[in-house]
Image (cartoon, rainbow, N blue to C red; front, side, top):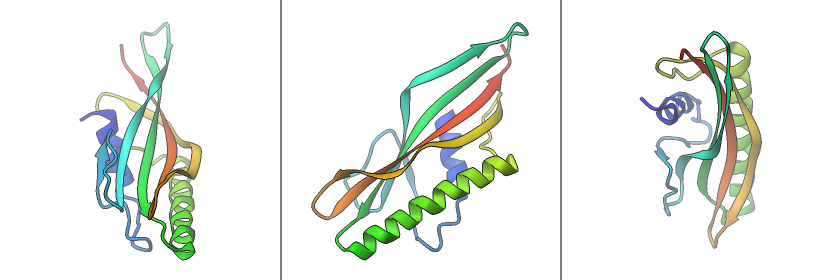
Length: 139
């Protein structure tokens, strides 16, 4: 399982029943369909090397959500969903309830860029949010 897959599996635990969102999250590509989600790895990885041989990685992943935005009420609901997801990630970090990454120990997960409206189209908006995950691996 990749780091991306681990984060997707973890994010699907978000109780989105109030919003009916996050049923499926694709990797790397954003679908043209409304109510589609993808997780895209950012092209930067921070690595700290320790004398013990351990390495600490910080990776950034962008969650993209293409959501209907025909009415103001839909846009308000979309922002409510984004705020709830941000709070959920923050709470899971406090609880130390992290994604399970094979052969690694996750130390922290956080939202580094809050949920915001990115690309706007006729009847939908691609919202984006960046999540950072810090984890250690042996040699």
